[in-house]
Length: 448
Image 1 (spheres, one colour):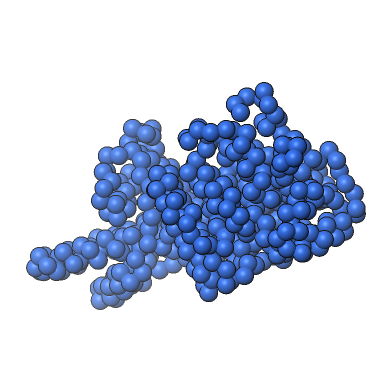
Image 2 (cartoon, rainbow, N blue to C red):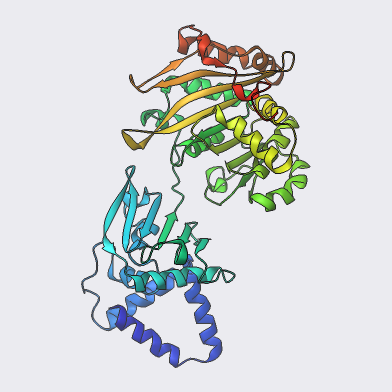
């Protein structure tokens, strides 16, 4: 069927002039990159050819929803990946990643990488790579590493050539799965405790600066989206991300949120202009490098509240040190001062992880309160919540640092409300050993 359709299209190509050929090449390029209008055009054109040749009822592979879809995927699309890329069933729509390793195709489904029946041979893999690179003329085919995006937002990372073993090229596909959860739905899934929802709403009302930490696919970004959805839609926001995965204009369509895609040197160049902005809050997604960490501290040092960031780190305690050390390594300065700044500027870190028995399930494993005492020059990290993996329950600590109470009283009337909720959650019990004074801030512990 693919050969038949290709012969018809080639015949049309031979009968056209150079200008029409140029326009057709551009249209084909956009179809290959997933542009909606061009994709629909070629699928309909393929359907017409199949009907005209009376072969519309022919067999096609079961991982495609129709014969025209199958032919399009082979000629212009993602071959056997099309079903995953275009959410052709409910299961694939919920899958956030796919991997092509050699000729083997895997979909991430229900927390596991599942091998698919289809095989993508070396000829088709090479064709797929060449087609994908059409969108990035600056990328040379012989480069062993490429990162690019389709029109529908799918991020593709390609490793090939000398960077991989023979016939074991790698293509990693990541797509944004929009999950419009509420706190209640996260509680139903077992990600957060239902009893904590009033606490989260009170924290949002107070305007705390928070960080969400955890490994990839731990639920930190989903939690951040739910938290942000409760913000006042009339407040002005700035989002800075390393890639365009989260469509805030769809999540909060009426809110004045500016979205920028930048990291590294690009972010560093924009920092001065961003600091002059009049935003009510900032969101930094997937902070990884010194430029992002430094900007987060610079913005929150001006008194900006309601800011939110996500960080790839399984330990909340480690996050302040990670941020400070990256900044000092890149720009110099005092490690202790930068650590103190993190504790001064940010209020809580929400730690997330995957359930070790079921990777599809995400768990809030801890809430860490950060506090810096300028009188004693101390940093204090206190868990107000911890998940007990043995019992499968959350444990609570009736605690709010004196410094935090004073800060909260300055910015809102929520301190008493938060303490009242914490008292109910913890049964009024204070767990002193959950308050930590990390060694990385002590003098003589290393770089200062």
